[in-house]
Amino acid sequence: MDGFPTFGAERLPTVLLAVIASTFFVGFGGGVVFPILPNLGAVLGISAFTVGVILSANRWVRLVANAPAGALVDRYGTRKPFIYGLLIEGVATFGYVAALVMLPADSLGSIVTALPTVALGPLVVGTDEWTVLAGIAVASETWFILARVLWGVGSAAVFATAYTIAADVSDGGTRGTNMGVVRGGITMGFPAGLVLGGVVSSLAGNVAAFVVAAAFALAASVVAHRLVPETHVTSVGERTSVKPWDIDTSAPAVTVGLVNFGLMLAYVGALFATLVLFLAANEISLLGLDAQGTSGLFMAGTVVSAAVFMLVGGRVSDTRDSRTPVLLGFLVVSFVGFLLLARVGSVIDLGLACVFIGAGQGGTSGPMMALLADLTPDERMGRATGTNNVFGDVGGGLGPMVSLPLVEAVGFAPIYAACAAIPLVAGVALLVGVRRETGSFVPGRAATDAAAAEA
View 1: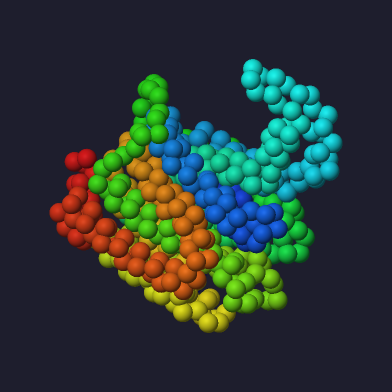
View 2: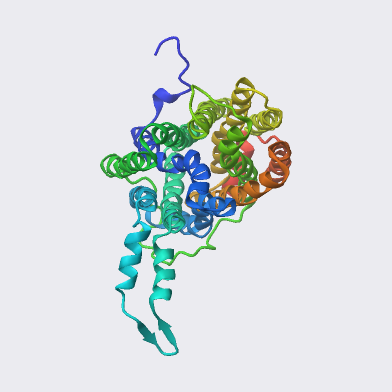
């Protein structure tokens, strides 16, 4: 690799390579729905609000699953939660297939008429009632929601364990790099899913795209079972129960969580949920693909940019005495990206906006998680990661439910312009939280180590 910058990647522990591979494969199932479902909603008779609910259901589930997942990691280790989380995500991806291959209406009618009338006290369940219940059971939106719910449970375990593994095998000089590459591995599967969802659905149909994503997602759990060891048992023998509210409420966890909330609200909640509709409304196409295929390519480009700058931002923060300036710089990059998006008039304009937004999102991820690990004792890192994920999931879950109806009401440009202000507000929250914890807006490595030791 002479002549090419590696940013420290040549020193990655083997376990991190296994984590990256596993999360990359399972990420297909996370990205495949975004190019397909917004357009499919009209075909299935699903309202914009219901589409938003489906896209964000996994994040709402993680609101109650993140904290138990983090607590499980701190008490029982990383290996089993990581493997089982990947397996659950693989099963969930098959739910997308079920959503599209349910019984046709004529078959449903013949089955319903054969069901007996049942008297349950004053309640009589006859043909009409069976029809309603069966209609709900086979409705595509029901299966999509169930699949996203399962995905939320599995991904809560995967996220909590992946970052904790990276923290376990890192020190102050490698933490930013390792966090960046793990985050990059988690997110690189997502653009692959976006491309798969857009291109494969355009060429071979929606069912084919979901089947391929599901196969890769299940393969991820096999990779993890063979290659990921235990890294984090800190309290062997402790078997207390875990609760949804068992989270880390320290200043570092809440501060990093608030930044994550804002970024996910704008990035996934607004951009990803509305891009396919934006392309269709503005008749923007790439390589002759329709809106679904084109949105998959643009979103993939955005996430590739994010993955590259996750590694860059993490590595640069490892070489500086303070991570705060690096974080602030990338938040400004995100601000510029959304301003460009609000003024898009061509394919080139949109591509540039996506690169900036991805760079801003990715560049903050590695340093942000490294800063959290700098300020958090090892035995609390699982719960601190859970807290960060809770905030991120509130932002990512709220975004589609708000942005899709608002886009119909006021248009795209005002929504994207409003999103540009979010990274700036996140930067203010970051400075306030870091100052409160360390006594400085730009604390050096010694100050963060001291804060973690005191905590």
